[in-house]
Picture 1 (spheres, rainbow, N blue to C red):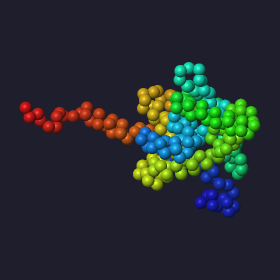
Picture 2: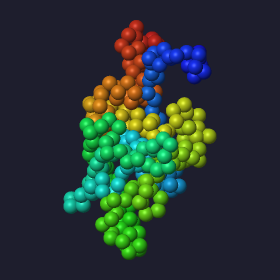
Picture 3: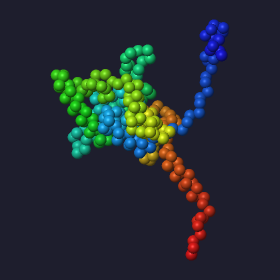
Picture 4: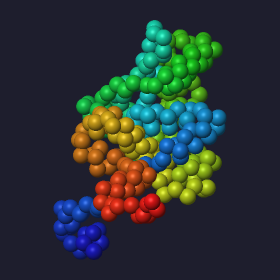
Length: 264
């Protein structure tokens, strides 16, 4: 009512401008199951390998959408000297859409600022995928008679050679379409109430780290949170099966005795 009166100049000031809205009660974080995530990956590995890589990185490294889209091949470090291929990804910036503009804006800092700049290790499969992609990009540049070393400045998630990144909404739309086709959470054939989104994959990442008996501070550092409270409140989900097991364990501690008498 106050806003209505102020817009129509019936009030000289709007007292509601300085009223802080009460915070809604935060729902407990939920994450898709391992089986659901694997089902999506199995579909994407053939249907859309680049989207497969985006999902694989998000669930493994917990990157925000903006940081994921800002990845360039120069941010990827591979070590081929040992028996096994090893590598890491450096996260330093993010791609966001500027409201009202027709282009992307490249942030110099990630969402939480400089403290969230970090370097995360990759498993052997991700390293192998990046090694193959780098070779492909070099070949594409040579075909265009360009310096093959230019691949370091190309975006990983891009159409064509890689001079421009995907728009943020493009990635979300691609994932939504893939969910429908694969029948995973959020898709038309799924019965789950936890849709696989970029955010729920970050929840999945943090929850898997915690479930593997790692310190919650590892999850905080991986996700790039400035506060441990953020990780704990919004990103640590517990699997339904483990919740059921936990209450069964408590109940077993208070059993009166065998429910069936020994016949002997």
